[in-house]
Length: 292
Image (cartoon, rainbow, N blue to C red; front, side, top):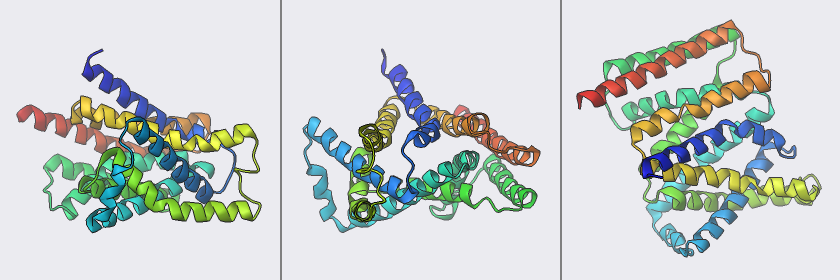
């Protein structure tokens, strides 16, 4: 199998798993979102430690924490990704998967906005049109549903800001994720220790199957990221950008057809504006590359 085909399969595996992630979360033992995210941090770090040992990399990645710039950068990125995880886990448990999908549909547009306002990048006309359509969709959803789509925007902005910080981080890839989970570990241990000591923790009080499922959150977090990292090395960035829409599309379908969440005409029009904006972005990207 050639590298490009392998990269495509790895990208499909990563985005497909993220698309089905709401089903995985629903299969886990019920617990507060904060406790579940804390387990995700703990078991992810343990899995990554084993991963580095198997690859004979040891704990050399820890040495980078001696650099103050690395600590600051990864502390910020760890807070952003923890916020994203916490909101997402809570939203799935609350039956708001469709809103989650909207957040990840909006995310590329948020990344463009961050590029303009933070990095000083300039937008081309079609990009301005896409961002304007997204803004119109947010206004439309706020007016017609009577609720500002804060959940979708919080997911989009937390993940968009996370991507921006990671883009400029001194340590990237799997090592960067390991540093982030390590910085979050004290907080996670505090949450889990308090839950278990109070008798409300779900790990020690669960069956063997339940404990395995909870521990599997480490694999569920890191394996798709490893697959994505492998894909990004093997296929063009344009293909990665196109395939990223698999995740919110699958989440949307799961929310509507599996969890039977409400999706009336008003929401359909709001989503339609976002989908039109994304189509403009894709066409503009293809046109720009053809000209280059």
